[in-house]
Amino acid sequence: MNYFNLRHLDAFVTAIDSGSMAKAAAKLHMGQPALSQAIANLERLSGVKLLTRTTRSLLPTPAGEAFYKGAQRVLEHNARLVRDTHMWSSAQRGSVCVLSIPSIAQLLLPSVVKSFASAHQDVQIEVHDHSVPQLLAMLESGQGDFALVARSRDHDRLKSIALLKDTLRWFGSASHPLASRAKVGLRSLRGEQFIVMRRGAIRDLIDPVLRAIGPHLPLIEVDQQSTLVGMVSAGLGVSLLPSLSCQASGNARTTHKALAFGDHHRMIDVTRNPEHDLMPSAIAFFQSLITHLQAIAQHLGDGVQLQPLSALETARFLNDAAAQTP
Image (cartoon, rainbow, N blue to C red; front, side, top):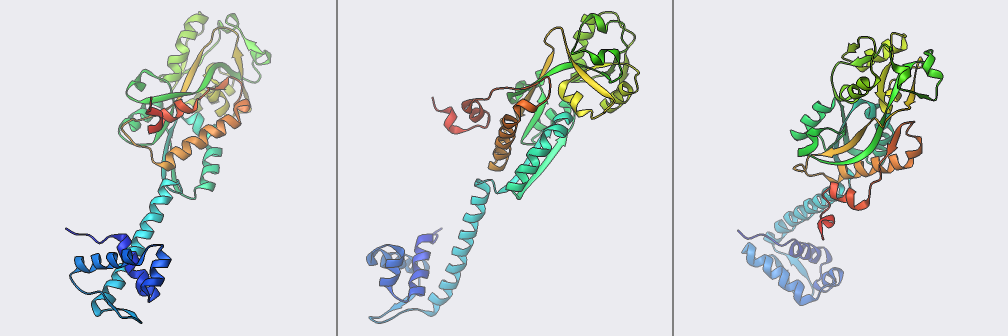
């Protein structure tokens, strides 16, 4: 099947609009022979005479008049298509779907989303906050562009880079005797009543610490972190939580302190499915997130440290083809 060349269509429309081959050639920055050849190609493909040329005038034939209107529509559609795809390529249009553990979704994402949405008003933004297993399952099934999750062995099939180091802290009532200390030691935790999550990544993180502490009262286990916070604020016991979770509790009757023993922490990774291509809008959001975190690195809260990210590492994570060049 033969197709009309867009440049030839533009040449034909310009010739009609100009009423002169010489004027059209000048406007298109091409020689008159090349312009005549372009129109001749259109006539050959269409199988009908499109222009009537005399020494004084340039007029479309009846078939040329109909062809002119059709050519205008094709050129307008092409221009619109170019504009639309440019909007996508420049991240001014599209979508981004961010998956996140609740503490980051609550503490860090709001300001990023607000800033990004202001600069990319035609980009649809979705945020899903769930537990790590749910987020990873969503990512593997093709949902979401990237996830902000605590590192786990289930990351093996995905592509990840370290984002934050989130240190484990003592979490208790503001009126608890340990609340006045700068750091909480191992011995001071023996005999305490601990309130902990029944299962999940945080429970996996604190179990080795509980064993190191030694004797303590039987654990109070709960399913929701909000329940844990409520019980701690009521003075029913203490807990161990990552710094971001402590900050996200938002309860004025609780406080958190550094542990004086060991280096107990979780790593927060940015994770993506390597089989899912990132659109420019998602890449732009990721870059906005990193820029924001770098700007507030000194104000992330006690126990939270931004991990260094090189440009090469970031490009590889985003699948930048240039980064694959040896």
